[in-house]
Length: 417
Image (cartoon, rainbow, N blue to C red):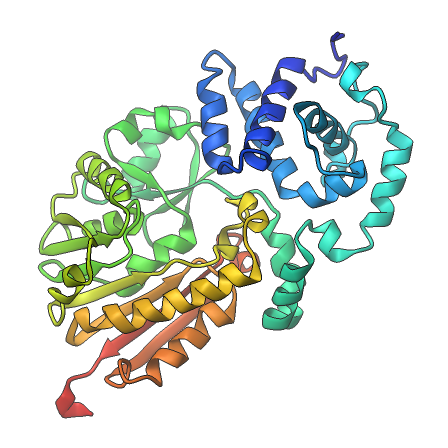
């Protein structure tokens, strides 16, 4: 069935990519979990082969609409995904990565490179098709971001850089950089804080430095959240939407393990993951609590010096990391998320003490999830005692990191109103 590809496109690797794509688009599983599983199933694969599986899978997911349009249909079978991979090889967005021909394999026998390229060139005239997003999302982005949308959209299709956050409970950025270099992981510092960017992709989870809890993976934009909230040692801090705890761990480090950090979430298994991460990081001041009823939140009213609301959002600012999410989103789901965001602002903001500070954060780029939500909160009864100190919108093209929004608010005492 197979002949050896003279350009070293190995059938076993293509099969793994096709299997991963089938899991993502037919079984509706999350891309990162599918790829993680695929790599675990191939433990003996070398670094180049593992990179091929991950990068090719993400490439097809990122440009799924475009590749399907060139193919003429969405794959409905395992064989269909083989053909889609062949299309991706011929019209790869990076011209330098395109192939002149495909291997003489049965799965590729009806693909004509010249016909494929001519069709692709015509389709590239449509922006939504070229950037491979749904038409409705292109319309929303244009409406909300205007002239900024084309550059934003293009940046969201670029592969994400790998960024580490130094765990200052155990080491310094300079020392971590030296430790990683000893393990053949080259990094570069970015910004004035604790971030390091990998010069070349590597599986850093296998390093001794990671196992020792010296760093976490966390995008540079995400690291700005805890830094802006600026908790001090000895404070009571509440992370009300903690999830897996990346920002909670950063807060704990800034607090130098002094004080009380309460991490809340409605999903218990995420808090279990946080507890494991906290143990490795040596973050001993984190108390994880599941939100099983409104009482859990109400018992905290008026007790926190700092409050982080990293709310559920569309995730459009992190599409380069989660490209499959654009195929799962809809206008209706974003509208529902906006309602949830405002409910969290209304119901959780009383956790803060007078004089305390609250940070509202999303990994979205849409003003309707960001500035407009803050304005609506400040105009409401719940927000009447708050004032906006600063807000920042980070677009992915600004510095090449994730899109994020941060708004820092202060709760004033009744006497000052």
